[in-house]
Image 1 (tube, helix red, strand yellow):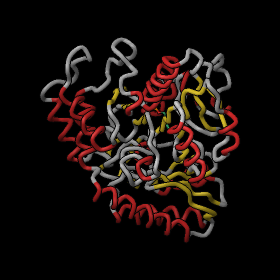
Image 2 (image 1 turned 30 degrees about the vertical axis):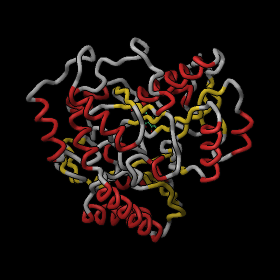
Image 3 (image 1 turned 180 degrees about the vertical axis):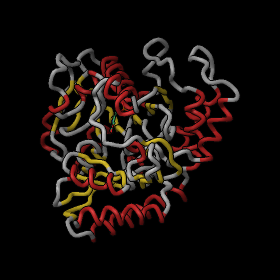
Image 4 (image 1 turned 135 degrees about the vertical axis):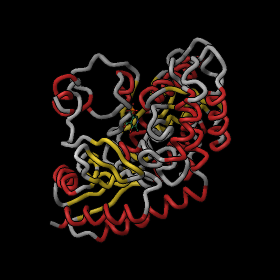
Length: 385
Ligand SMILES: Cc1ncc(COP(=O)(O)O)c(C=O)c1O
């Protein structure tokens, strides 16, 4: 059997896959099993921060593989400790819990918020999230996710989540009570359609959470690790979160999640209250250290420049109604259905994604200008056809 047949026969059918077996690549140029070339505007859904098989990233991993691949959290782990220090020094957060995915990073955020709240008052365990949000696929992060479409068939859920409409300050104020432990947001709702939260709404959240004993959790699973043009998007939005969750691009293609804990919650999770076998795996942590080192101010300014260029070029295309997003996380509203555009781009050698009704672009942060031009040319042809 070939790969597609093996997959259809033996892999659980949870993914509606596109018709390509991507086997190799360098940077933002990928190849399928037949050697066909693709420009990659998806980076494995915002994961391959420095593109495919990046040399600096690869060497960091190989150096660690020559030492040891895993030790367990029973012992101190050099890379985990170094990475935690780097993340805290760059963000001002105080401590880090490491896991393996976005959903797990959010599970830790939710547990920390509930423990913080219920240490004050046993009923202070409610977390307010937003309609149209996406926080993961575990039962609890699905409960946090404010989209009915993901809920069907999986009840009963973890209790204690309230969903309010994004950008509706009155609804948010109305939902706050003595039981509110935290407000949890994505600054840009990625899966929900690349919707940027409004300034007024963010200011209201900041005010409520800083003036009351209510925590602010920012889910930076998709927006984090340089994608927004800042190391974490909240850093350029005037927010002071208590908890930041991240994953995807952190280790640039190896599985790693991190939950950054601020001053109020730095000591909330104590020995025995949480854990993860693979958390801070030394190989994944080596990749993340290398990535975070490279995401300096100069590099992030380049991300913003590329974003501005992309936005300007996309807006010029006939058939583009609007462009939303931040940094290299862009949503393109088109006259034609987004799903048709994605399929047509694939045929012509460009990988793009959808987010609800939009075409979503999440290129590697080091995509070259040449690759950007090539990809844009294909996208323009497909949208304008
Ligand atoms: C904002 C956000 N949170 C959480 C997740 C879940 O991450 P993972 O698939 O790594 O569990 C995602 C995944 O798309 C996401 O975009």
